[in-house]
Amino acid sequence: MPEYSFRCDKCDETFLRFFHVKEYESELKKSKCPSCKSKKIYRDFLADNITPNYIKGVHEAKTLGELADKRSKKLGRRAVEGIKQDQKTKKKNTLEKKLPEGMTISKYEDTGRLSKSQVDKKRKK
Image 1 (cartoon, rainbow, N blue to C red):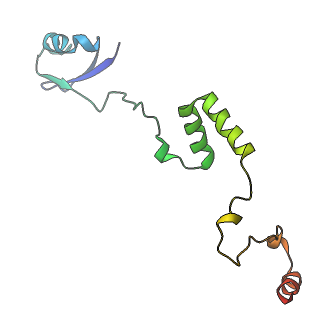
Image 2 (image 1 turned 90 degrees about the vertical axis):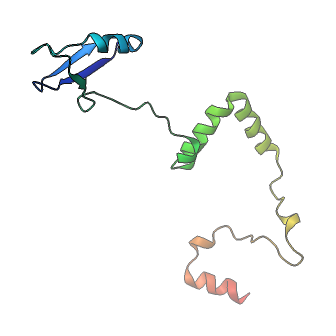
Image 3 (image 1 turned 135 degrees about the vertical axis):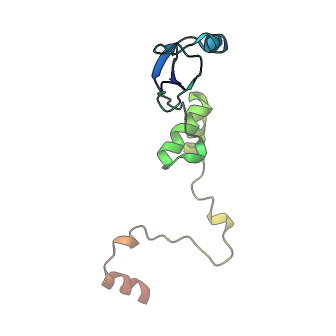
């Protein structure tokens, strides 16, 4: 049952009431201030403990891992396994067929780790 907080307009007293959401309208009409018995009360939303029930969407993923987790949950285990299987059997060098004539893919794998002298030697070749 939710907890609703109210404030009295006359004596400024804050009090809590517990009732079902379905009973809200009927209970609101019956409610009175426990101190002065006034019916001039209003909901005090500042005192309510409201927490949002919010789930991040795919568009809000901050990392690739987060995006992969969300998509795999959405697709299901069998679909993810099928995608992984497709990736294993796919040809790796499909890009070479699409390059214009005279262009090739660089075969240097460790170019980021070469020293300056090694880079100069490769340029002279």
